Image (cartoon, rainbow over all chains, first blue to last red; front, top):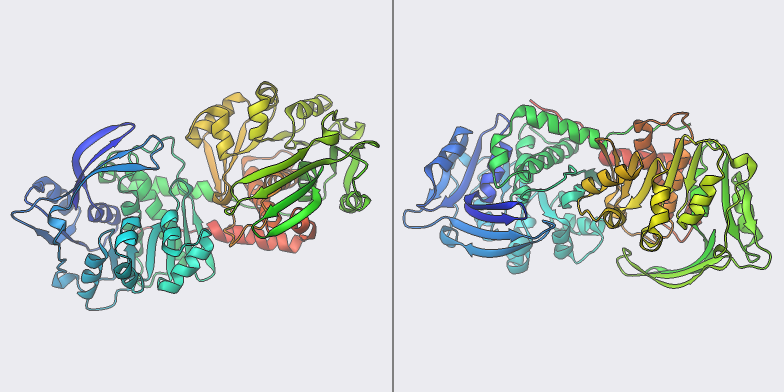
Length: 299
Length: 299
C-alpha cells in the first residue's frame, strides 16, 4: 500500500492512494468473496483511505500500521507515449523492514495472490499459509528479476500462475520468442504462464494451449499506474468464484482482469476503479467479446 | 511478380518465386472463384512458375511478358528478430516502365485487390475497371508513402478497404494512437481500415466498431516475406464468397487472411502456401478460434 505522485502528458496527481495491494483488492472485490490484504502502512496513511477499503468489505486485519513510520512513497513521470516512465523518487519507508504477518483467519485461502513486491516478502507470506491454496498466483516485475533473482526463482517454483509482461518474460528466460519463453517458465514451475503485452493484450500459456486476450483499443491511456495490479486482482477475484478453476475459467479470468486494467488506466490512480459498477463491468466485458468474436463460413 | 533472394537466421534461398501478385493469388484461390492477375514479367520467368499458377486456375491473361526484359528482382537479409531487414539489391527491370493492361474479361470484377505496388500502377489499373466492384481493397506500404504520397492519397480516397501495418498507419497520419490514426484514415476515404501488427495480430476499424484478430503465436517465424501479401490475398479471396460482404464477413476474412499469412511465414517464399490444403486451412482456422474464444460467467 502506497502513496504515489504521478505526472502524465495529461496532468499530474500528488500523493494519491496507490500500491499493488490496493489495486489488487479493489479490482478483485466485485464478487461475493472474502478478500484480505497483508501489507504495511505508516502513521501518515489517511483514515478515509482505510475506510474506502473497509466499505468494500476488504479485510484489513493483515495491514500493519507502524506508529513511527511513513507509508511507501513513489513518484514518477510518464513519457509522451506512456510506454516508458522515469522514477523520480522512491521512499521505501515502512516497507524497508516489512515482515508480513498473515492473520490466522487468512491462513487457509482458496486463492493466494502474491502481489508485486520483494520476493522475500512474498516468500515469507507463503510460509505462513497452512493449507495449500487451490491457486497461488504470482505478480512480479523486472526490478525483482534484476536484483533478487535467486529468491524470486524460489517463489516462482512454488506458484501455479505467473503474471509478467513480454519484456520481463524475455528477461527471465533470455528467449526472444514468447512461445519459447513460456515453455521455459513452465519448466521453472508455474502451470499457467500469463504474458501481458500492454496495448497488444495478453497471452495465456498452459501445456500446449495458448489463449490470446485483446486489450481494449483506447484513444488514450490516461495513467498506466496500477494496470498490472488491477489485472492480477481482477484475475484472482474472478477465479475465486470457482471451486476448481479450469482452463476455460482462466481464459475468462484474463478477460475480466483486462477489463479491470482498462478501467484503471482511464483516470489517475485508483479513481476510476473505485467508481466502477457491476453494470459498467458487464458492458465492458460485452465490448471485449465483440472485439474478438467471429464466425467463419467455408464452402 | 518477382524473383527474390532472401537470407534469414535460418538459412537462405536464392532467386525464388515471389512478388505481391503471386502471394495474393496463391492465398486467395482456395475458393471457387475466378482469380486473374495483372502484372509483368521478363523473359527469365520460368515456365514452371507460370504453370504452377495456371494449375491453380489463376488467370494469367493480364500478365505481360516482355521479350527483352528481366523480371523484378529483390534481395534482402532479415535480422535476428525478423522484425527488421536490410534490402541488399532491388532491380526494377520490367517493372520500371510497367503500364498495367486489364484484359476485357477482368473489367467487371466482384472484388479488386490493388496489390502492394507503385500507386501510379494501382491508379492506372483502377481506371480500366468498367463497373464499380463491390469492394476495392488496397494493400500498400511505407515506401510508397514516403515517395509518392499525392498519388497514393488519390488511390486511398477511392478504395473501400486499406491494409497497412501499425508503423505505416502512424506514418500516414502522424498519430501515435492507432484508434486516432484509423479515424483519420477513415476520413481519407476507406470505410474499412485494417492495421496489421505482426506478431500482435491485426485490428479492423469500421465506423465505431473495432475487431481484434490474433496472430498465431509461432515458436519461430522462418521467413516473413510475403506475409502481408498472403494476408491481403486470403482476405480478398474469402470475401469473394459473398455477394454483399458484411462487417461479420470482414472479421472472418481477417482471420482467414491471418491464417494464410501464418502458413507463408513457416517456410521460404511461396513454398508453404503452395502446399497448403483445405484440411490444413480448416485445422488452422480452428486453432485461431481456440486462441480467442472465451465464455465469461458472472454471478
